[in-house]
Image (tube, rainbow, N blue to C red; front, top):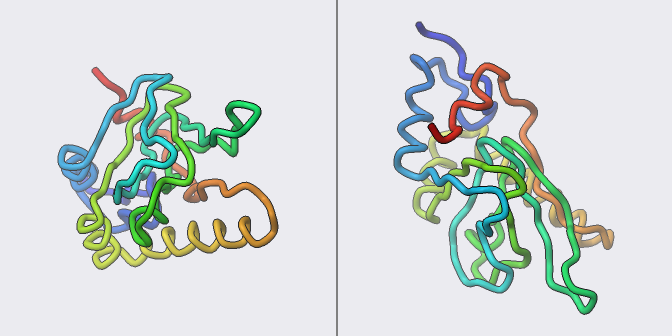
Amino acid sequence: MIRQCAWLPGIITTVIEDCEALRSLYRRHGEWHRAGSTIVHQADRSAELYVVLDGQVEFWVRSTGGRRVLSTAGPGAVFGEVACFAGGARSASATALTDCAVLRLSRAAALELIERSPGFAMQVVRTLGERLYAATHGEPAAPAPLHSIDDLLAGAFRAA
């Protein structure tokens, strides 16, 4: 059946059959993280961009008082864009609050997706803009979620 794959607006907005394009993307770049596992560590040097497909992720930093939570995010959130495109160390850790599925995109894969999908490109720009706004206004940076995820496919990436 052909239908609009609206559960990740901006990333895949073309009409596709059974959302096979995302399944293919997940097979190449997807990761499954159990609740409590760390996806990225603060201060690590890596250049991957992440997109949360399913589940909840908590972002936190080490501080003198221990661990300070910055925010949480769910399906559609993009994170790791600063390390991916500007280089340098991760500014925060990301931990799976629930079992979750993410896309882990290398810089090359992220750039290819940006080139092919203007909607995804706009989401990355939006996320960077929100991070810049938060930084200049003294607020913690939080991942910018996409608009919505279709309930029909929200759990499509749960481990079998």
